[in-house]
Length: 607
Image (cartoon, rainbow, N blue to C red):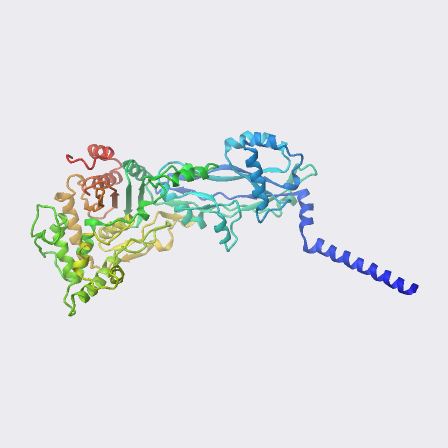
């Protein structure tokens, strides 16, 4: 009997021992919570955020830089005798806000009572100065320095974009685990497109503390510290003086200016009107300011040069002419009567050749041009003829960069629309259609849609006599001093370069003695341009102008769109010629044209 009891007691002792051993194994090997608690008594882990890359203009003028800001973190285990009233007073927050911050902090997936957790972010230098001498009143709360974006100018906001805290969705989709909650990320513009180059790499420092929480220097002389790596600097292709001048000219107007250096594809100016002050989307007031800006009925966050899709208007006649020449359906000497029974046209010209038809923007001429392109009588059906001809037409028009994403180094670029046979099949519910149903595309109306950057690129393509580089805003990345490789490749059109001489001649005539002579002509340089007046019923037409200058060895190609401003020869031609003048001479020589633009009375009958 006694033997049985002894064996039971021995078994109990063995089981208790095994349980203790298993528990110790979990505590010491599998569960690191206690190790963290021990370490946290002696070691403070501080993240070292990298400096984000700087952005300068093509002439070395600084545009975007970094300025200090501070985050308040908390290690909940270290918080003792917390005076919430005093905390709210020092940090100027309400009790409700304080409770909300504690609740949100504890709800975070990565929250730990022994690790620093973000509590208040984006304190400015001024805010930090007010609280730094009082922080010792709140054991467990610490300051982490980081930087935020600052700007030397209010210009270029839509192209630069903005930086803010990473969203939960982006954090979830971060498969490489580069970011953590509270990190900043480029949300739009250059900041977003070049995020990989600009962001840098965070570092970490470990500091020793005594039992009272006072720092006592580096842990093991910094053996486990890692230095942060700053982001790469970018040199933009933008001419900041030209950009600021363009934004001044567009003040109070809706529309865009896109200027390109034809020989490189570098964007010299990219103006979206109206715009916003980029400094509003930095610091702790980011959220409230973002709501105000995004709710503005004028849509200042809408980047018009890349996102607005308009009918091209008469500018498209140049593309029609090039395509028809390539197809062999006309020659530069081909003449058509200005028959207004076919399509409306302004008076004052008749029976002109191709150059004259472009210079005077004759609608019936280009009605006949497109009809000859689409109706070649290659089949027994006019419907099939139009279908075959439209496919060939599409091939040429697409080669100019229309109807597709060009690939500029900014997000959210739109494609525009160049109608295809399949498009019209859907539009007509698979019923037959032919030239008489779609002829308005001949003069840049109807279903055609273009994006302003495409029109500037089109002007650059004509300036280059048949090829373009993808437009881009960054000409140099980091120490390589080169743009991304895709921006150094030439893209050729399907049009023989010889035919571009006709377009260049005609565009010079537009400015010398055609529709652009009054406001686009410059005394000391040959400007080649084309006006456009785009239907916008029931509102006034949009004013459009594309140009490049000088005629030979062009330095600048430009497209201007001014919404609801009427004739292309007024608002758009004036702005474009002033921008050309500013870029080539460094100043305007025609103050009366600048005064006219700033007055903005483009719809007045007496000009």
